[in-house]
Every structure is written in structure tokens, then in C-alpha cells.
Length: 116
View (tube, rainbow, N blue to C red):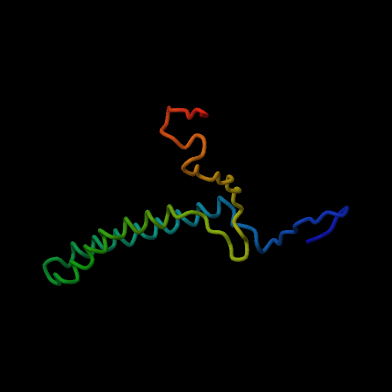
């Protein structure tokens, strides 16, 4: 932190900066294409080995069914914050205490209490 005119200013380091959005999207697309390419290869392997090596073909077929789900989950994963960089969160609204029995307004809704 630096002091300027008696106030503290927060200084960020470039090593804590997030990855650029275009670079992040490009990386997600690359991982998705690689996963889908592996799926295509596993479908071809399953078809080619179905009559000779049935157990290997079944494993390849199961892999080709599971890979699209994994690829979509990985591609849609949110941007991660680098270590050491705290997330900025909005402050929580103040919590109002619940009304206790016997306090004004604690009766049934729509019925107002009257003073005796």
C-alpha cells in the first residue's frame, strides 16, 4: 500500500492480473476441440474393434459417451482467480432482527394490534 495525500492506495502487481478474456476463451475452445477429437477417435476405434476385441471396443464406446459431458463441463467452467487475488464481493445487506412475540406487528398478517 502506498500513501498519497494521507490516504492509502492499493497497488496491484501485474503477476496477480487475470488472464485476458480472449485468451481464456481460446483456451476453452482448444480444450473442447481436443476432447471432441478424442471422442471421434474412440468411436472409430470402437467400430473398428467391435468384431475382434469386443472388450476394448466397449471401453472405447463408453469413453465416447462420457467425453462430451466432460468436455462441456470443462469448456463452461468459469474464469478462475489467480492465487493471492481475493474476489471482490458486494457487501451483504444488513440483517433485520425478527419480530419477537408480544411486539407490535408480531400478530397475524392483516390484523393490527390496538392499544388497550
